[in-house]
Image 1 (cartoon, rainbow, N blue to C red):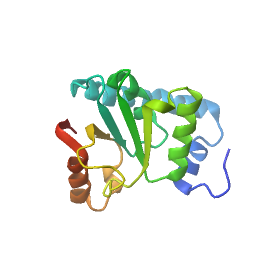
Image 2 (image 1 turned 135 degrees about the vertical axis):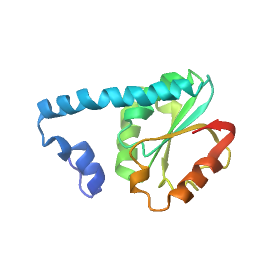
Image 3 (image 1 turned 60 degrees about the vertical axis):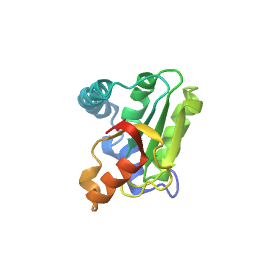
Image 4 (image 1 turned 45 degrees about the vertical axis):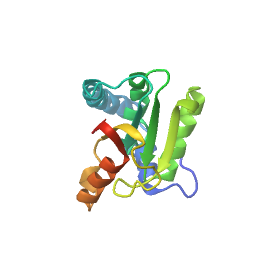
Length: 154
């Protein structure tokens, strides 16, 4: 349900894109899950190891980030990063309800300004459907590489 003051992107993503139609929602998810699985397969090819940290830039409602948790192993972490405070809180609530909150970090940051994250703090950076919306793509890639540890993967 829409909350007062929820940003328009979160409102659309969480509520309006399905028009309240659960059948349409199920149809949409049936189409998007294979794309999520392709991203997760690519992440597996990045040879993610236990105890590593994965940063999902533009995590939205956690489609990739929640699936990535098993890739980082029991001691790994996943960082949700999004420009939407509402989507960040939505994902945090889902993680809390799923009893995995302690394995996630949440960052409020655009792709081209990850100053909320320390240099060389993550092992893997992933993003999907984000760069098309970023005006300064060069700066975004500079930020991706700044937060990656030596030997990290994008």
